[in-house]
Length: 332
Image (cartoon, rainbow, N blue to C red):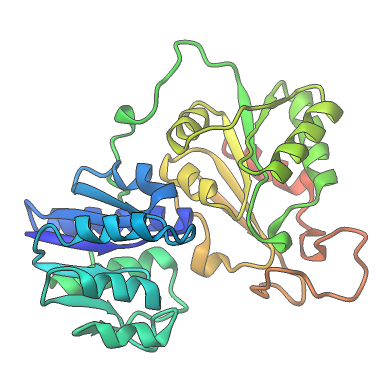
């Protein structure tokens, strides 16, 4: 059985999809997926053994020639089923362009954009309040007609094919400070305090970055804390190697936090405006710390709180470096 999976982004959402692919491959032996995905995340799609082919598309750059080439590749074979796991109008249109008469996706009350559901002939309900992983597992199970497994989720990745382990690994932590929303950033002074606590316990700290702004922040950390090392720009697979060899990881709500969870590394993930019940890191060694601030989780990209902003964003005020370290210490 060949299935086209449309799940374009983001990084965390892509990683959340892996357990559903594992469920399907266990329920239907021999099933193979072609994954249509944003070009920035195609590395991740190729990690799962049930993914036979990856088709990269980049809608953001709006290069018509490249988009048409991706659509031509998409239509190069027929599929027994198309699953749109994104639930957006753009993903639904791409799903409709595929050569298949069977298309499954979220119903109008479950899709992120209700209009997307008109493109499916199998409209599936998955409560928006469910965690993203649970929603995806239900979507796949219903579309492919098998019960959602009660077993612990399995990301289905053979990490030995991805991660290159060095013979000797010094003890270090990784700080994943970069994220897309302004409101999801843990205060910079908290990161520096945590780095100094880590130094007292004999740990180096490696900091990653992906944008110019994040690189500048990482450089400030390295200049102000002697035990901090600013890493070079990494591919996703290179970052997986760095994370795999770390003693522990502290992260804001970012795709790399979910990669850390999938690697089953000791992880403390920090949530202010976003809801851990829907997007919390899911791993055997993951601890999610959620803000108890009166307006959290607000799901706002920019904080509009008008009170005291001595600590900014204020919803992170009580998630102190000492609290983060105390939680991380239980995992080390």
